[in-house]
Image (tube, rainbow, N blue to C red):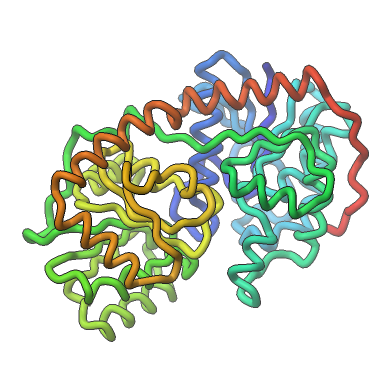
Length: 403
């Protein structure tokens, strides 16, 4: 099949770890690679954010990346991109006209809007993966939510006007059914993990000074819950916390976390590392006694998958995709978000029981290989495409323009 991925801000070529570069970039890159290995022709369309970028790059993984002009060719926060989406959609339509794909697959709400707008004009079915829903973000971030004011209305209409939604977890399906009374056809296809890189055997980072180690990964933003981990640390004697994910320059969240660690008297047991290159992440995960991932909310959450693939038990928030991926009493523990005492209790039980940690690690590896390899995810995605192309429902064009 010929498939056009649309990912306006999350380029698969971007360095993961920036303000708007994270799990979606990894998802787009790995899924494009896996689909290419299966023999499908994948082109990823993303916004040009540097005037020096070529029009097209053919990656070593077999898929192409096309840079479309929409707004100034510079890095912009994703929440500033909405006014440029009509231009992006127009450039997308022009590009797709040259070689019409079988399916257009939008990633994130603005990309889905552009994909739907271009796809409808070309009579190409549109598949949507939202990655995150504005209703959930608004619920948890409230006044801190910087999303464009049109987001909720646009997402609501998209949820009923695209040809198919590929949701990444069962919790998202529940949210989608609340979002619109008549949702599009929905397939649940999770994110995946690169099991060739993330595996139990291999080098470990060994600078723990003999302490038991907790490892957390992610962008340094409040919603990732790193503050909860620091607040749990006074209850965990002799345990260090390694947080990897900050940028090279000044970051308010890093400063806030350092201040919090000082206030709780655990600054000597907290390491705040810069964002690691992808090839260095498995060694850090393997160095952990327990991997912790306790965001306020999380549309899916790739870190727990990577940790389990490395044979490490996980303590995670009982939110979003982690309700599907982390099996309590089998691969780790689920705790309420923003609850340092619950985190400390779950971690303490695992640290005091080496046999349980080892068993959870073995169980996690088996669980990942049975459900979450990118090959399996790609096969499920292709099935969703075929069902969409084979039985395309009659959908109306978008009426919400707003940009």
